Length: 367
Ligand code: OSB
Ligand code: MG
Image (cartoon, rainbow, N blue to C red; front, side, top):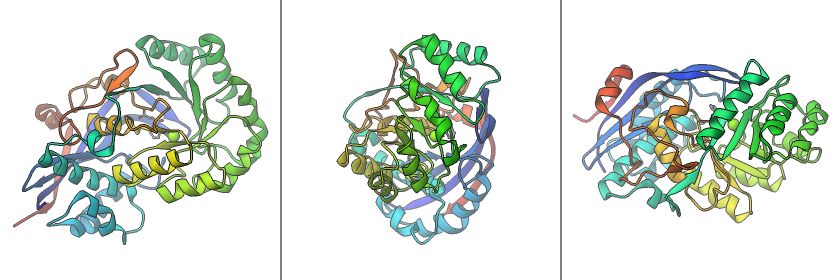
């Protein structure tokens, strides 16, 4: 497949409400899309990180540079999606940037065959149960009101963001008010091993899992914490490859894995992590990064693989956006439907994309 053009489009889309985590507050989805034009088809992808390196070390400005100077030159003019990882392997890190590039190329390639990404990855269902991630609020009544709204919409599982000072009481309040709803928490690295006795207080609430309590590079700390609490530990930030997954599983640092294709360098590595986890009997679920429809579509396809036995952070477009870049994804009976069209199965609506685009750069043009 010959690449003719690679464009980067900055987009800024307001969120319907502020989203607060232990690492910061987001009010706008401010990122970029990649558009890859080939001799066979066109492909799209979304960069998943933010303008500031708060969730992970990558950020919009750095990704733009590494794509322009180091990644795009290694995959042009001729490449297949499977070659992207080996060809960019010499460039350390930058997995979210690599994921965007691989995904846009994969989209173009799959569109040229007329194959949906779900079929390519091995999806075994056409709809997946949807969970919703609920940010840190100013008060318990505000939290209860929001959770009540999400449950009324039909979400099958609630994830509460936690941090020191916002953990036991919000979890207790949601449990008391909503009974045996599927409930889990995500700390985004906000605790240390010294907090083990405090985190053990969450054991009584029957949580599905506790996501990433400790620093991303602290696999051993998670293994030690796992011996001191009953709530199953799930890793997010710590898992950036299938090798990481195998290590964390072997060291008993996690009993569940959150797979975000962006964090691990793309859908091909995400599938390898799924396969490693299934081989070890470790349940996985599909994480999210407040994606627009461009990232949401292929995430839904991944979430339809058989090892994804827990509801993912795969909520409807309107959870975050009054207006999405694509046709909106909607929740139906607590499920989200996997796109059925070729490639990632979605594309930006041109007029909407134009309105939300703040800058466009050409990273490659074949002469
Ligand atoms: O840790 O899972 C996370 C959003 C941005 C960055 C990190 C995380 C999240 C979420 C929201 O929890 C998931 C979503 O609904 O997209
Ligand atoms: Mg997380």
